[in-house]
Image (cartoon, rainbow, N blue to C red; front, side, top):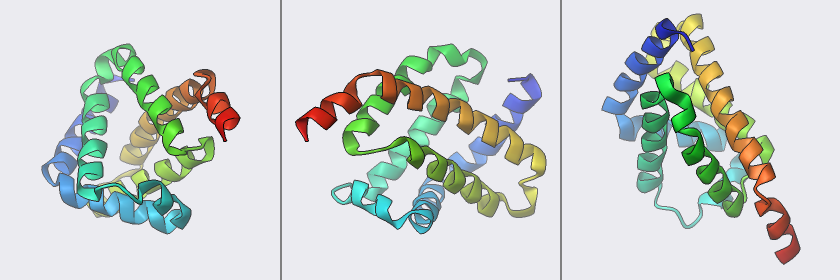
Length: 147
């Protein structure tokens, strides 16, 4: 990513992080609107804690944008955990849609096409790493065999 793109992500995320609980609540609201079946993955979750985890994961990635390769192992480990929770490849598109919509609602008219493009690129990069890790880890096959 270019320095100007990183600056956009850092600045906008700082605003989101300042209102982390509200932002996380809005994200999960949008996620469940787009795919109500995903609620089942969170049945025994403390949603406030889940929101903290979401913001922490975003913070890790945004804080590592200049050295993205250093965060790849953490994303891969997270992907493997998510497979164990029942996350499928197609869920990543729904999460991306909910994230962009959350940011759009959060920033309103300040969420420009440039912001949308940079956030979309960042999310797609993360999702690609996680989908690949979830599919190459052997976890999906182990889960299929144990079902």
